[in-house]
Length: 174
Image 1: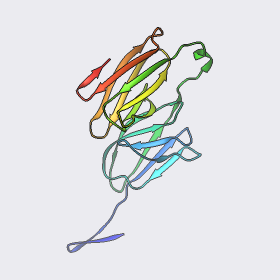
Image 2: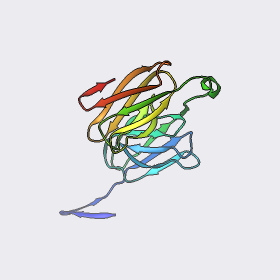
Image 3: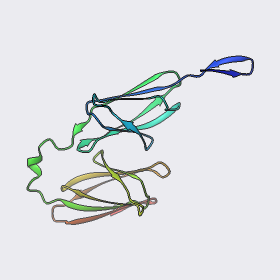
Image 4: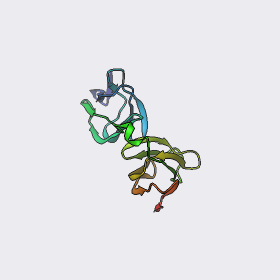
């Protein structure tokens, strides 16, 4: 595409964003916005990303999400490699463990929720998400494009049946 600019011609440059993943059909997110999924070979390509530094997340249910930041420069290809690891390699180890029900309250609707770097879903219109997790030390991260990211690590004890976690804009309450 040729654009005229004053007395000189400028060629519009496109930034090509490529993702290489070991997992097919993984979701690709740029700054909190889902831009697509990897294909059957674990590849994804997009040419609509604008110049700047953006947060990248590649995730799929059952796998640990890959998070990173990439600098996009007009006219240059940017490649992001995402090696997703299975979240639980031995399901038999969890069969006799009583899970803990977690009510996460963020105060933000449609915020992305990650537990131990694994994408868990979005908060509802009330800013809540109910999760069922095995006991142990867990790191919760809530991301909203306006409020940014909040993170907390807590231990879910086997004796608990339900745990309420509030991640308000002013801080975190348990």
